[in-house]
Length: 398
Ligand SMILES: [Zn+2]
Image (tube, rainbow, N blue to C red; front, side, top):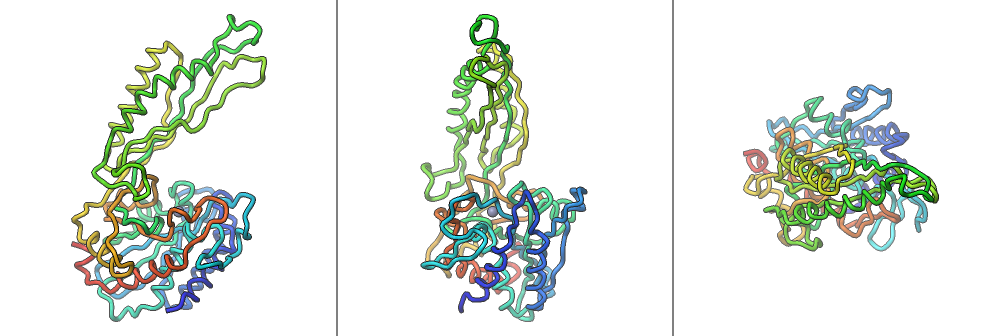
């Protein structure tokens, strides 16, 4: 089977800048997907996330269905929004460039190749012979959290399936879950003043340094937490571990002013099975204790949180996907959890068993300069979907 169809479609998708912040290309990209579905006699509909957001900005989530008349549906999910390209690309970011078994362009690996592979598979299938339905969700807004993308489709609109394969992942592992996260802001207050008269002020940067070194105890404690799920193969630890990192610090106006306020942002990653409420309590306790110990004035605000999730490894869907990947790549993949997060959490939140596998190989520079996808990975994902479509209904839903 050639890859001509998939690469042609991928070319059309990459040529449209679907930056999730600007959203200018959403409409045009959606039109291409609708046209492709119709050309290939697949059912297609639009779930507009704007109906949830209510801000006048069109958010076309495209649903493409191969309906065999079965009562069991396998959901596939991939997103067509991208992050900005940034400068210094070797190849034009919004053109598809083929070189040495790779296709370069923003959004190739993350995540437009997933859509091309899925439609490429669905167009080759004869629904009369299938025991399950396939439903592809080509979503928007993933790169800004997915609230009016997949979350809206499942939690508000109520779209359902019996299991989901999220194509927004790498092919090195079969992912059973992902880490949760807590993003927060710490504001440390001092007293602003003239740097020539430091005894009249209190330096918020110094207070912050003291507070952060006290929080190092917390960081070390978090890093000792260990999941029962394996980490991805390239990770420095065998199992997923807790993480806490300070990610921004903002303070100061000018050389001769002692800063009166310092703002710190952090990112805490949870084990897939960790309770987000307990993690938040633990964080707050440590913070209060550190503040007391230092004797500084500081407050903590949680900005955003998302629980982790995992699908039980003995679920029939895990065995089905594992076996079919083995048929295609010739070896068993490690069952792992993701260190980052993805839209899989919304399926888990709605009680749908979910696994992640896709074209975002570790070295594909996703979100970076010169992003690319391996053509081999597009072939593998397409063939996996073809194989999965042919399983019996009880191999998807217990
Ligand atoms: Zn992605």
